[in-house]
Image 1 (tube, one colour):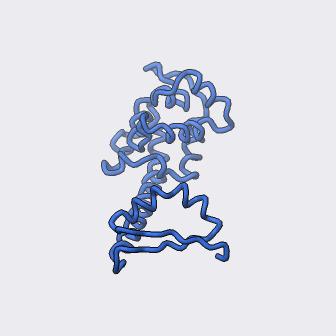
Image 2 (tube, one colour; image 1 turned 30 degrees about the horizontal axis):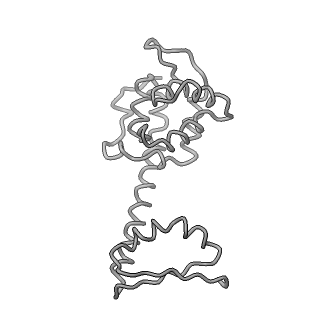
Amino acid sequence: MASNSNDVSIPTPYMNVSLDALQASTRQKLSVYLNIERLMNEDGIEPDYNGLAEQIGFSFLEIQNFGRQRDPTTELLNKWLRRPDLSPTVGQLFHYLRVMGREDVMADCKRSIILDIEHYVSQVERRQNDVEALQHHTTSSEFTIFIPHLLISQIFTSHLLISQIFRPLTRYSVMTSAGW
């Protein structure tokens, strides 16, 4: 049952949210609809993962490889996320689904997507608030980070993140201990 396109739109502020916001359950719900291969619609677009991949801009060989996967839609979404040049946003996903005539998918997944976005946005805001609180509660320009020994390798790969968080501080140090 196709819905009116106004019933399946998402709030404008959510249009540019990354597909990273989508939880596993929402991705699975999308897969239930899009993994089933369907015949081309009157516009010559396949209204399944093949058509979505084609609209996104994946090559013929990439699309064939998606079809070899146990869950082609999830594989497609994951690869899309690794390609920022292809604009992996919720707004783009909804645009492509609309072009494919898949208002049914949009209507049935809309609530899950909006809840996922709200959760994602609140998590991002909470992290930003935590960082701001940490920065405001430092009484000097020095700061020490205590890190369990098991996380040392992660810290070296996350040095850029640490330097971004503590940029306002003139000096910070990282201490590790095998005893933690």
